Every structure is written in C-alpha cells, then in structure tokens.
Length: 82
Image (cartoon, rainbow, N blue to C red; front, top):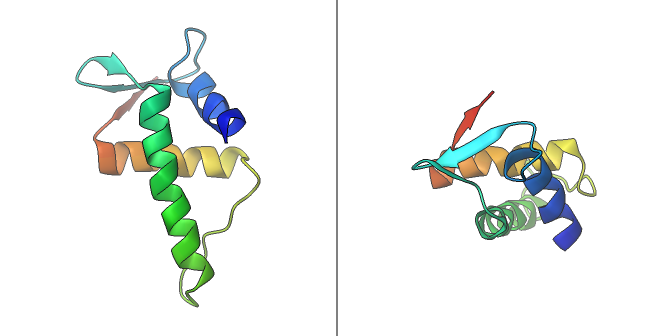
C-alpha cells in the first residue's frame, strides 16, 4: 500500500510532481491520499459483491491512481491544476 500511496503522491504532491492537487492552498499529503485510498478500497469491496459495479483493482496502475485522484477531488474537495 505504501508503494501505491507514494506513486499517487509522486504525481500530485511531491516536489517534482506533474500536477498540483491542492485544497485551501495546500498540496495533497500522503495522509490525504491514504484517506482517499480507504474510500477506494471500500468501493472495490462493494463492487466485489455487486453485479452492477465494475470497479476492479488494477494492481496500482494509472487507472487506480486516477480513481484515487477523483476521490480526492469529489469527496475531499481538492482541485487539480496544470
């Protein structure tokens, strides 16, 4: 899990990030990402038991990263720049 959190962080919060993901003027932290990953894990769990949801874990790939980014934006009110 730490590897995936670091992967997401490298895109949106690290000093050499590709995109700025901010809330109230502050960059996303690993703690913020961890909270969003917990939401994502719950969605994956729910999808496993649902015939209607099509969430799957991609092994920490770019789709997983983007889903966590979207959770940060939609649920935690972050804003994506760049």
